[in-house]
Length: 415
Image 1 (cartoon, one colour):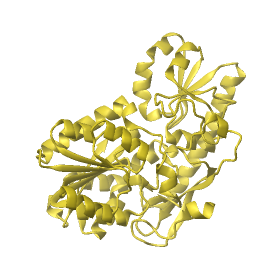
Image 2 (cartoon, one colour; image 1 turned 135 degrees about the horizontal axis):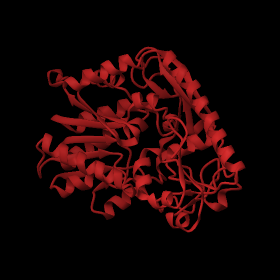
Image 3 (cartoon, one colour; image 1 turned 180 degrees about the vertical axis):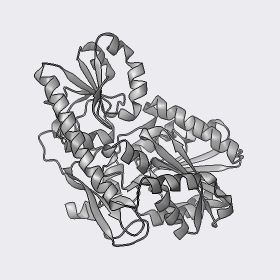
Image 4 (cartoon, helix red, strand yellow; image 1 turned 180 degrees about the horizontal axis):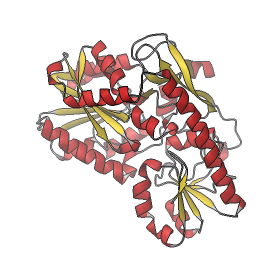
């Protein structure tokens, strides 16, 4: 069965080169969002290789094995709108785009990987036509219930043609926190070219490779995250399809992401000077040097030793530790570092879709926030580190009672 649902890449997704070198190995891990029901705990789990490859030709960093998107996304349990931080982020994003590109009631915005419509809601509220593309049918249903028209399908050239026939072309196409999940980039970009107006803009937003390296965000590596984007590979990818990166912005979500604006027809004269700033930074960070990633691998092992030592010492002293947040990336950290119920009693998560389930591989129970408020643990281990600031602020009462917070990256520390 595994051969049918997983494949090892033979060519780079960006440049199609075969010059791929394995630079990061996380062993065999379960799918990051494959949370378990109680009755599944005694059943065998499937684990898949989790390895990262560097392309010597175009310097693109990418996952070496691809799990079937049908398996990954059809029963997705992540709902974006449970995060107030993301809700505000996308409200600001929509407002900026509407103003910058002079959108009106005739304009169409299409969001690829639209989840529960978190980005499209503020567009629609401001009078812009919207359409979501979300392959997880149960999440697409949530969006539809909230008034966001959504296609419960994977984006493709054929779907793009169908949309154009029914609704016309889109002035804006977005792919936020989804562009890193796509295996067949050629298919998607061809579809974007099909659906986008001649003066339209394709906007992607993905975790930025520079932050991934600087802040040791190794837990962003999991089977859904196939690509680890920097500006240079994006430029090469879009140029291959007659498109140009004309602007780039740094945004704070996911610990540091890059928002990229691409247009049709190689309108290079429109390129913003900010793109060159990112290129210079990437050159300074030596992202084109394979040794950068080999050194990074050794830093991850150092982090592992320090975190395990910290947790072990706390438990030996009789402390209770619970965790906050069960994002997909937490399961890379838990499984690769082998942190299970011997360290963490349970994980608090705000999403009703995850409450009552157990983490893949480590089988730690996920509970609602009410459980944490009733208990009296000494430490709160923040697995959702990208929301550490809001979590600390929201749970100031825990600190007032003498509780302390553990943040695992870029280096383990107690607050």
